[in-house]
Every structure is written in C-alpha cells, then in structure tokens.
Image (tube, rainbow, N blue to C red; front, top):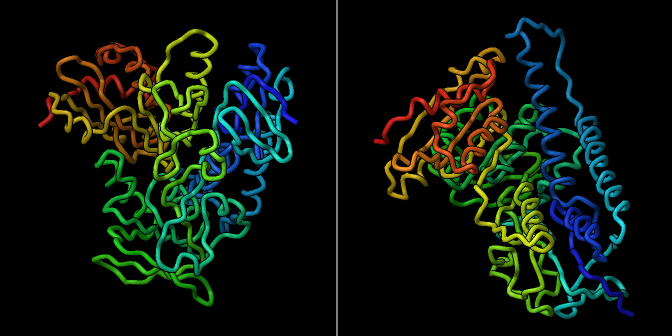
Length: 459
C-alpha cells in the first residue's frame, strides 16, 4: 500500500521540522521521517549538550580562579560528571519536547519513525510502508568520521556522541584532532579536571581560522595545562591493560602517549549511505555528500538536500538558512540563494573564537588593497572589568570600496559582538557606518568603532 503526500522530508535536524511546519501551514500534506530522535546533531550531540558542558566547565574554572576576584572558596572544588550530564540531558530533552509539540500542533504534518530508503525518484520505503510525494527533501545530517588509522579497530574510542554518555571523568583524555570539536572538548575536560593531551596532524590548532588566532589558541591551551602534540604526521593506536596508547610521529616529545580514553575528532561524514539514493538517481560525491545548486536542488529537480549532508555549511545556522531559502523560494516566489549568505562561525573555546567573512590570509590572497586593524582585548573596558582580557579583535577592509571583507574576534563576548560587523556586511554599507555608531559602554561591541577607526594599509 502506498500513502501519498505532497512533500516528504527525511531527517529532523535543524532544517527539517521547520520546513515541515511551514509547508503544512501552506496547506501541504507533509511526512517528516526520523529514524532516531527529533532534533538531529545540534539538539542531541552537538550545540545543545556541548555548550551546556562548556558552561559547566567555565564555572569550574572560575571557581578555581575565584581568589583573583577576592572570593575565597575553602576546600577542594568537586566536579560530578554525572550531574553535569544530567543537567545537559534535561536541556536536550526540553529541546526535543519543544520540537515534538511544534510538530504535533502542525495540522497536515505526520511524523513517522523509521529508516527511510528511496525505491524510486518519488517513493521511499519506511518499514512495510511506501510513501510517495511530488517533492522530497533530504535532511539527514552527518556523524563523526572514523579515520583509517593503524590500530583504530583494536581500541575502544570515543566520538563526540559517545563522549557525552560518560558519567565519570577520564583520568587522561587524548583528543585526536584540533578542529572545533577537538578544541572544545579538550578544554571542557581539562577544566573539569582530566589530564588532556591534544594530538593534531597540522602545525596549528583550528588551522582554517585566522593564523594569529590559531597561534593564540595554542598559547591558551598551554596556559591551561593541555598537552599539545602538533605536526603529528603519523598516528596509530594500540590497547594497554589500563587504557590506550597513541603512537605519535613528530619532531619533538615522546613517540607514545598513554591515556585512559581517546576521542576521535577528525571530521564528519554524511548519513547518506543507506538512503538508496541510487534508486532515486541522486548523485553524491566520493565522500557521500550530495551536490546541490544555489537553491539547494540536487541533480533530480524535485529533490532537495538541506543541512550537513550537502556540504554547503555544516553549521546549525546554515542548516536553518537552508530551510529559509527553500521555503521562501517554494512558497513566497522568492529567488534566494546559498551564495547570498556571508560565512560566519564560532569555535566555542573559552573565550570564543568568532569569524565572519574572510580571514586575513584569505583576503590577502585576493590581491585587493587592504586596510587592517588589530586591537587586543586588554583594551576593552568590559573585558578588563570581567577579568577576561585574553585575545584580540581584527578587521579587514577593502581599501577601494570601504566594505568590510572579514573580521576575527577571539575574546570574551566575541560570538555576540561579531554580529555588529556581520549586519553591516549584509547591509552592504561602508565600514564608516560603524565608526560613526555610538555603542553602549561598557560592552565588548563598543570597541568595534574604535577598531575600525584605527585601520591602516596592509603591509
């Protein structure tokens, strides 16, 4: 038996539920298929639980540093990972419940639990049921990659998902991978009390970010007692009676690191291998990602791919914007495009590292004449008052057009303050729009006009 719908959405990550509700409110009969729990990566194993843990780790860090503020805590600082997990789990559950309520209240929307697999360009199979629709939307997200490294199958390793299930602190956590996921977890567990070693094959942490920020991230981690093993060109694993040995080939330090736990944080892969995409005629690249056009259509015109599986953002905010683009184009007669959005992201170390537009290195590579300004966070009154003066602000401007090309804020409140610059870039206004603005004192954002007022030609 076949059940007909106007639209089928596979996956309930950041784009899926909101698209389902929007289409249903427009009178479409919609099926939203989810094989696991509502919310996708962000709600369940990404932003929500990890940022809750970042907050807990910061409290532990502040407690240890309290005497600097004239606050004296007598006795040891106790940390319960089980209680931290319980708090995080409750926040996650609240988010799931909110999504469930939203979907249950959407007339015309049916939520189906199960594994979806295409059987034709218009049909998917879920269990014994066949569903058919004129329009289909793939929103299946991704998962942690398992690298093909020697010995990896001989050890019990953690991913960003399984690490969240721990209820006792690792004695010594070895993090393999110095991108955003690895950096965030390394600092979280060091602040909670674990010994932490971070192994990165590149010469720097978060190496895709601004080079000065990347260098400073290493300095921050060394200050916090995280052992760094950079330039680790060859990594392999072997089990130990009481843990795991990570064999590291680099130019300095010992060739082995012994730890109790290993977290693999070496990229992500899309959840597309079991969808039967070949039955629908949908193309994928060699890693399984689904190529899409500027309006998120696959090579099959009535099938769209949104979120992490399309390699056009891989962030919660870009996934949500995918929903906005598709909904506006289908229902509002708009012509919104992926290439209209300005890249913006943050790594949630403490302090956070926020980036909008181009890094300095990317801007220099364009050959433009540039204006560049840099200010240390110790120049920000708000940072001084909070006792958090680590980091800097940087802005890059096209000297000819006076438009902001990019900015980096690595410091307290940077993930919020960066939006002042982002909004000016979206408005396509010259940087002087901000130099003439009056911001509230004392805030982190108030230094942005001062920063832009100190622009100088790049060397």
